[in-house]
Length: 149
Image (tube, rainbow, N blue to C red):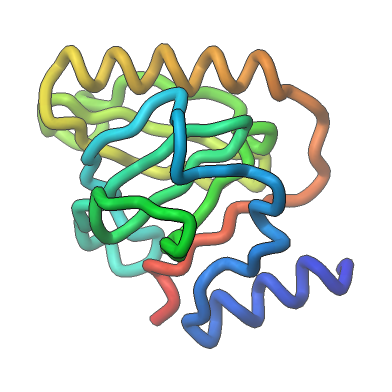
């Protein structure tokens, strides 16, 4: 396992925020490709948290609040090039406006948008970003700091 991967696992386990190395060079605080509120399901605790999401230059960031500045610290980041599919998930979650994002590490993350239109726009934006940033990845690089306990 690479030292970077070990380091990110350690950060996740200890509840630290993403390292700037995880998003170096991406100005997430300005001109996002898409931004908005989504409810995200935790990978382990399965609880729902409302987070402000920002899609920018092949990375999907999330924050606790919607005022994102240069000083903001992401609560998590997903490199879009680790994502395989993004699609509706109402039939899985039995909730309206739900969608899922599957990654190369066999992880599936679930989200609920605030409206059907928002759901479709997120699916379209993330799908477009997946195509633009696709490459083969051998290990999961998803770093989720909401799910550290």
